[in-house]
Image (cartoon, rainbow, N blue to C red; front, side):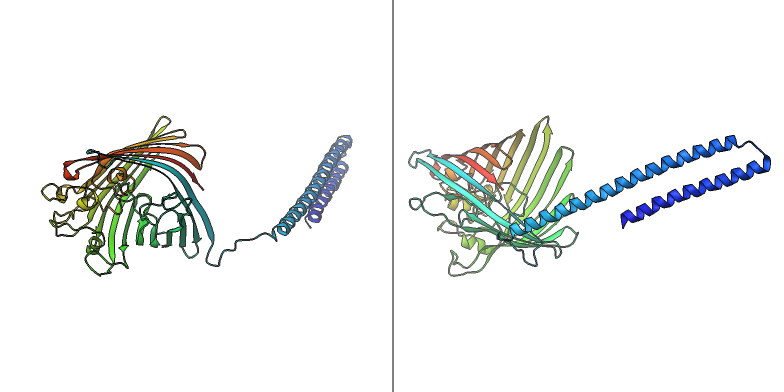
Length: 463
């Protein structure tokens, strides 16, 4: 249809040119007869016009041929595309397929795998509990996120081949038997609903850490269970939430199986301009009375109170570039406004003195950390110093590595020390790194002291 229409237009243009020529001839003849002028000049003009019209006609014919050739080539390409599509469809017909349900518009699968060699030196001052420990560990995580933009829902489900601990996803090799099989646990399971373009969202379930913080307040592997209401725009962010700590188990005080919960909130800002950026966050986290009942395991005859956790926190970081080196400074502060001399978490879990005359929780209620991170090419180096007093943050949510060599357990209270780290990115997804933690007790029991060294060598792959 396109070819016919074009040809008709071109033929019409030629006819129009001939009509113009006849009109010119008629006018020239009329003028010559009326005024008796010489026809030689007029005939020369007519001949020139004939040649011009002939050249235009030849150009029109050439354009017509090019148009027909393009149409032929287009039809040929369309036939080839159709043939390839039919062939691919036939080849895939026998392959297994993943079919998404009606409520799923998209699915993203991602995870990571980390192999770690770890060595611990526990070196008490009295030399009575000297200990060396080496082990291989792994952390393998795989999860998927289902999205439904039409209804503004996101569903996340992840698994980990690690441990059941809330503050560690590491699984030690062969800790119970030779070549033992590993365990599989739930990493996260949540539903998130976004309320239009308001920046407001609600997340319910076992979720990734919703708070902007460092290591002294919450371990990096922590997955809170509860509900988070979050809001964010280009500059300000805020969230509040309620989370379950323990349930369905008898507490220390008796047969009560009441829920133990934590309530928290945070507000902060994120700023970025060119190569300079900053983050600042302030938060408050309150643990109810039942939290203490679930976390007391030893009798303290001289202390009759209960643990009271009312944690205020601040976190900040500043990032920029100096030449080709990327730098980030970070700081974190936490204080337990509920610390009371009637009960000491540090004496139970931080190896602090039990006698109130030797150790006061109200004077050991603060934790802080300062650090610097530098990145050059494929290398990233980190240094930080942390001091986590015995009754500053809950022992059951703080970092599980820092202080573990000094306390002989995955707890990080009543500990201070240095953290060194170096990582090399072999490729976009694969990296090799090492870290060293040198820690000491802040206040030791029986007037002694203990120090520890934790060495870690990691190989990590993210996908």
